[in-house]
Image 1: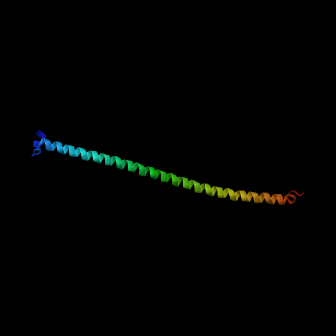
Image 2 (image 1 turned 60 degrees about the vertical axis):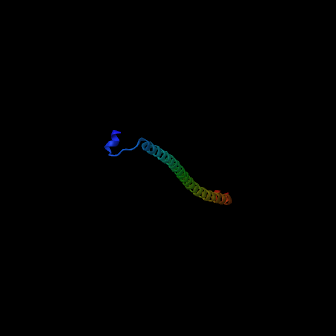
Image 3 (image 1 turned 180 degrees about the vertical axis):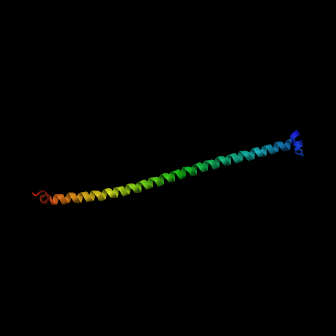
Amino acid sequence: MANLKKCDFMVHPNELRKCIIEIDEVWHELSQQQRYLAEITNQIHGHAHTHMSIDIIEQQNERLRQECADVRELMAGLRAIHTFYEKNEGMITGN
């Protein structure tokens, strides 16, 4: 009670208990909201990582698609050269 007198007001012990209970309830509710927000934040980060992973996979997929197109083009060129040599084997070897 000495601290209360320093503040120049007196609070009845029952009123003080009510205030403590209300503060405790508010703190409990805020704690629940904080945990809820933390969970939502984690989910958002999880989705962001998922989206980043999807973006990376899509980029890699596009790069591989381009590499496959390059390989197909190279193979078509090699087939054309092979076909040319087969058709002109006698001319090239002199047979």
